[in-house]
Length: 154
Image 1 (spheres, rainbow, N blue to C red):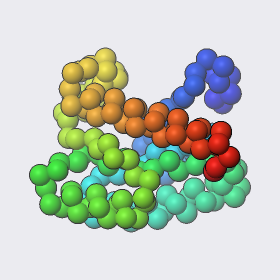
Image 2: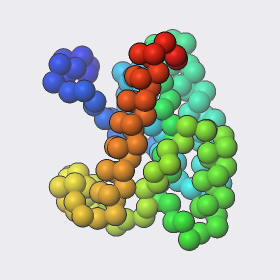
Image 3: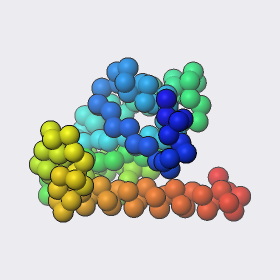
Image 4: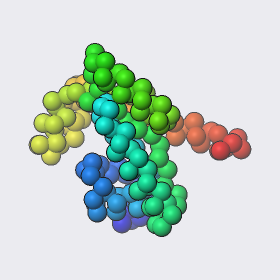
């Protein structure tokens, strides 16, 4: 479904609902990479094991090249002990967790309700700043990975 767009875009981002329904399964089947958004809560790790099982099934049956690039901590408030402890637990379970976190930001929900990106709706908000930071971190990882492949490392 995405192949006709490959010549026009370097990256296509598919943002899915948190439930592993048919839309999410189809998106994972078409994806090269997956970023898993996770709230900084203790129960977040329960959903991770289900997602890992689903990813392994998709690798085995449909898309052997899909890569989990890491977790993204969302709605993160560094002032809360629970969030700091949960972030550490998620990072321990998934070492490639992004250093960037997405802070609570009402503009993110408002942008979604308006059918706009955060960059269109509130380009100077914390939400926009956090997603810019994630973009930079993601692109740096990709650049570093290409460098390792170029120099014979995997």
